[in-house]
Image 1 (cartoon, rainbow, N blue to C red):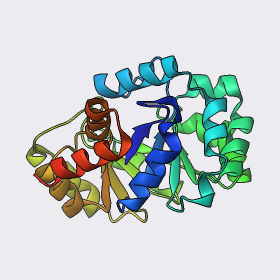
Image 2 (spheres, rainbow, N blue to C red):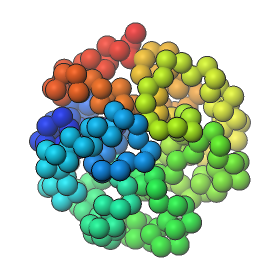
Image 3 (tube, rainbow, N blue to C red):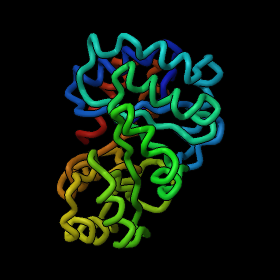
Length: 239
């Protein structure tokens, strides 16, 4: 599951994590709000804008996450863009991730070559996995390279587009089969577009699981309440 930290309310971060864990979610991607989230569609863009208006920042997020491991025990992945992370300081960001108990991070606009040459040693120093994204356009050669440098999971983007919801993944089956036939060593989680039972069932059939973001943000936006938002999302995923 993905959610934007500080949305819909500034102090919803920890309650959201606790609620998702209680409902059986296996892993949570914590989104760091940014004013120009290039990989995200309008739903997550708007949630980032609202979170920033609420007063969310990287420093505030780490304050909120300081006690998280007292109650939350599922894996946590920090998802953010390079610009605010570099302003905070990459080493400082990794150090804080380690301090509060974050397991891995996703930085979609950090090129793989730059990560390997400049940042991998820092991430490893703090025991953080780095999660790479692949799309239908990613070559087999690049996918195998990513697989060789990964010890967590590979994030399979369902389509070469921004985040959002879709009604069906029937047109993506060839892509899913292509990746499965490569016999990669790492598990794959599929994200972008999962919003109902049909898309969730397809993803679970062809991968190790789903990452749901926009559909959850929509539910939170409609309810303005963490528990009600989770319940609404679960209802929609069953339809």
